[in-house]
Amino acid sequence: MTPSELKFLLAQVHSGDVNVNDAHKQLLDHLRQAPYEDLGFARIDHHRSIRQGFPEVVFGLGKTPKQIAAVAERITANGNTLLITRASPASFDAVRSVVPSAVFHEDARMISHGPASSPGHGNVMVVAAGTSDLPVAEEAVVTAEIMGNVVDRLYDVGVAGLHRVLAESKRLSAARVIIVVAGMEGALPSVVSGLVDVPIVAVPTSVGYGAAFGGISALLGMLNSCATGVSVVNIDNGFGAAAIASSINHLT
Image 1 (cartoon, rainbow, N blue to C red):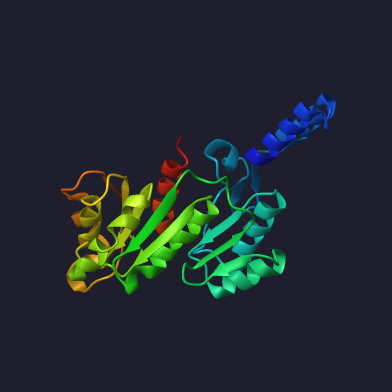
Image 2 (tube, rainbow, N blue to C red):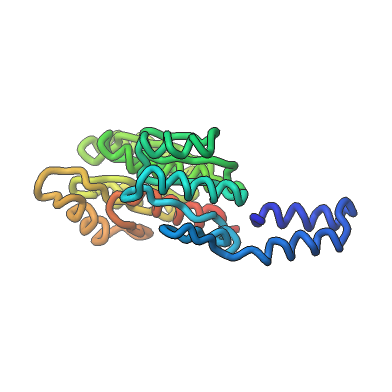
């Protein structure tokens, strides 16, 4: 039983559509279920949405399509929203065989199914420095949308052409929280943070030539930002950035 299903059940009891005894039975049936399901190769945490507000998310990299499909089938069978990151077309084919209405987000390399979470209180903006950063930016976009947020994209506004991001100051100021995705030297989050008074979640990407060290240069640059209000997630972690931004956007 998801938090929204529990709220709906309580509303039915309040309105008189469901009596207390029937509601009590439904809750007991739910509580009797194990908090996780052991598939042998994976233990699916079916109660995560109760503890954290969103179901367990599947990291697809390193898993076989068969394993991903098995996990996806059990997550959806328990009424939870499905979200799989770093998914391949082969994994999507396997998932679609057990969850026919699943959706493949090719640019984000993600699979999703089910309704979005309850809406946030404002917009989440995803800013990307360059086109090479779009896979990570789109991972953030899809995650934020599934988590119930209205998302505004602002792409290809890197610091090599600073006028591009300066021209969008009104859109930046309208966001409640901003995710900034950049590789190379990772300077864009500092620039954006200097223009707005909202939290910035910076995502370093593994984009760049040799001295970029697979995103480490961007990571260190963002961690050393002189601008206030910048937090930093791991390299290429668009999902993690969106999860944090969504939490902020759902605060009252």
